[in-house]
Image (tube, rainbow, N blue to C red; front, side):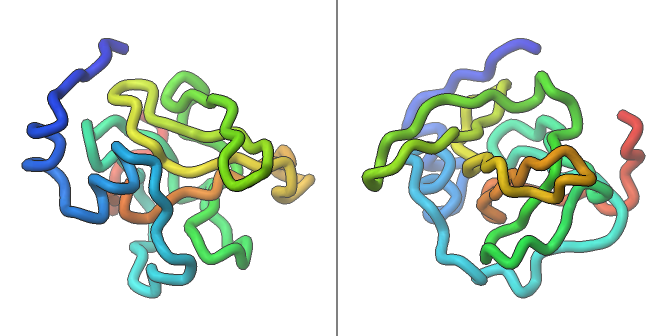
Length: 135
């Protein structure tokens, strides 16, 4: 997968203020701020570059206040890095293609589905309803 690199000005022009702060400056949107988060069958893409990241079949209600998934669409679609902010050790998740900050992954997901919880900022995703999940 080829990397997408843009200037800060290009990202600011492309993204909403909140999406820019979350994806480029590692901010976090307010919990429970996505009552209208899209559901149904489809694929969730990176808001920055359009890369397919998560399938709706992996989404679940974790109660954490952010959209949660048990796994990415493909292992190579997201990358992780150590995050020591806020006095804790976490694994940050970002888009492998454009390095957009997506959220964090935690080891407290459903055991029967692999045990991971990808806690993702909704503003970092764009939903394509009905898109084939086998891509």
